[in-house]
Image 1 (tube, rainbow, N blue to C red):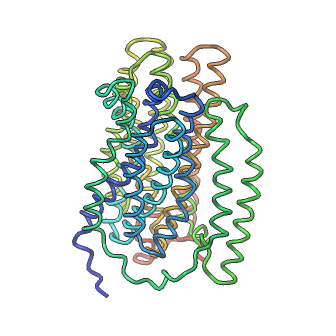
Image 2: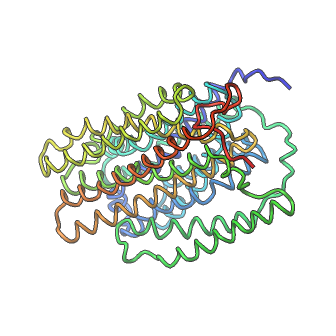
Image 3: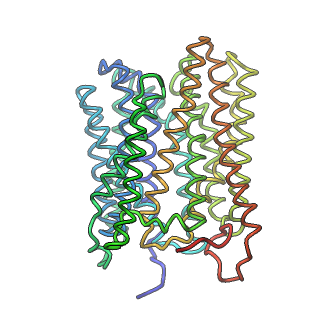
Length: 489
């Protein structure tokens, strides 16, 4: 078997990144279009909330199972299926005649995104080695950061051009001219699946059901509590604990009896992976919630248009884009210290944003004043997402790359839901109590700062622990600059 890298790997990666960008963009781009949906469809507040939360729920629901299917049954096959379904559901969402239809289609679109996303990580694991893998993950990290921050800007541009009544439809239609060429190029450029012995492994349907029940029962009250914590079905957290406990027991039994669990918990005994997954989940809890509260504050509190709101958030995307690619190339040299440095820079940027918002409360220059702090926070974020993911997966074999990536991304989705729930509870609680938007945003940002600070503490603790562990002789350590040896099996 040839060990030469695939000559088409970079072109294949570009297709994967385009598809990944679309799936992640649809998490944030919809937010600025919600008033347009209410106008155009006569949708209720609950219905437009489900347009956002339903996508997030089904996205998180299928990630792990989709990653396992990619590992076992072929990444190319799963990628093409997920991308085709995503394009079709985007068209159906744009054509939706009623709010009820739109909600159902968004649930299906989330499934498509969940099928697609782990395959991107799996392909990077398959196609790249050594420093090239860090560069590839750097580009993927840039996609994550940019898609999250640029969504409001792109949504604002589309709404400004198409009008408030039907402008929301173009938020979905925009995926079609991007997705169709990407589908054609994916069929040409992605490496064939080949024949895998692992492809004959049975699907762990019981494990999939238990995990799905646990994830949905955890995320549903969190996403529904963003605006009104009192009405969220918190009793589902008990169901989540029971389902996830049953999942762990079942997976251990499956490992003992037939050796084909949905998730092999040996992954979590790999120190770099366990630390990376925990740190990533915590960081995403703080990182994504800032766009949620800032969008609400700028549009509802200060009267900014969707386009103006998107322009205010753009510096974060610019900073993230610049440093993500750089961080991916340098992670093999600097490893975990670079992630810790990035977290410190993000924290400084968010603290500065909070301070500036307090000083300029209600001022017409607020948007311009926070551009610098957001640029700084974005620059730090680019040194966190991609390097952390590279380190987390550095000791995971490519044959398990999709499953491992699915678990990582599920953690990120759960972290996002936790962050939005916590920040939303404080933000709306303060707004209800005082009616003061400026006070609500500063209190909400305190929670985002605390969550990023917690991620920084986790990174520092791991860094200190790494320095106390025995050194690994040169040439025997991980392929990428990780913090040291792992627990193994």
